[in-house]
Image (cartoon, rainbow over all chains, first blue to last red):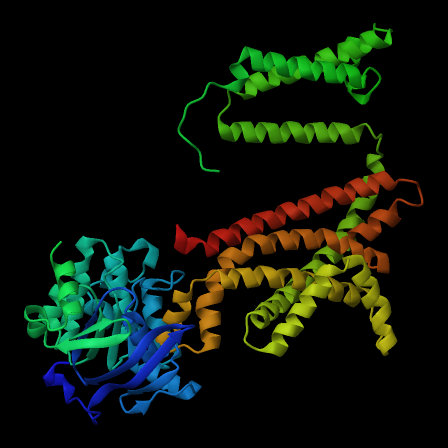
Length: 256
Length: 321
């Protein structure tokens, strides 16, 4: 493990703190003792071969997946299975999915207003103003009255990001946000994410976009078989990967 | 079906095909011996001079065959929509001619049809409408219970669907009408009928709702949770509105089928359409008149429902154009 990050102990300013996290699917050990501290405002990219538990790890943080052992603390709140605690954590954590998961029966505007209206209890006008503010941010204001099915993949993913941001989360989780997109649409989504990184929001992002990781991330985490086997600053990770598995992974993903 | 773009020669222009059709139809009609049938009476003028039975059979069969083949040949040239409309009209005319051979008393129908509509159709429609509304709620509760993580709820819901799907509706109607008074409550025929219909159809619709809800992808549940919606909000705002698209077509079928099954409550003396059809003609032995009138009224009601169903489907499909 890289020395610079070995000393990351649990601390008050940690946005996410994960200790001894284990998860099994039957006999399959998906997450094998994950230890991870993420500071408030930090941008962390998680990469690794498929099946290494990257998505499962971030899905445990808002309890979309359950885990059997270990502790997760989000902004000082220990994650329990109680409804109130889970609701509190989910309000603070926004999530963007590989398959967008927009609500297809609602217009873009209604997709954005649903959470603010029902969860944040804003009134109609406030929710609408908030929705338009974030649609503006992801540069898609003119599509407000369309249904998701009428938008391109890149536009849908930007709407999904805006929908998550409308809840004003302090942490954003991205689960392979560009993997389902046509190549020419990847950039528009990464650009939006890059701008978000400057706003001081904490970001945890599973992605194979190594250019994005190098430009935007404060730290790269490399996972294999449910374990974090290397974490480093982007320059260190890309120029001087220590672990043989990381070298192998980078050569496969960069030289094609 | 998804149409291919291959161009085929019209079957109705194919001499061998049309010849085969003609021969088969001719042989079958000759064997059926239609010389003295209602069809022969329709063709009266042609057959006036023929006395020998076989000659009459052959003449009727021949006329029928020629008309049919000519009809096919001409219709084959029509565009699709015109074909559909024309064939519909032709079948309707044949249907009416068929009923006409019963020697019905139209004046008798005319005197009774008003009462059959104001009393019979009205009762049928309101019994069915209330029942389908209750069945809808039962189905929603049943499906939610079946899909819940609560053992009691699952057991109650599956017991309910198992019993009411497994027992004939007619028996359920008797059981409710005759059984509930044993508990000390006297129920009228109409409430008993409504109760039986809603319980029975609620059970069928539980399965429809369950399938509709299960078909929504996990991503929709996850996205709802991730933005913080509670389970009730997730269900009512995200899952059910999407399931409706899949639930509406089979529910429309259920409603049409309930409209007709509501005729079963006539056995406990509810004055709905079927009850009147059986009783109004009795005094003058005009059973067939009343049954045919009821049949036509049921059919018209179903057509109205089919139209409403098509509208609803369009509405819930609007995001999927």
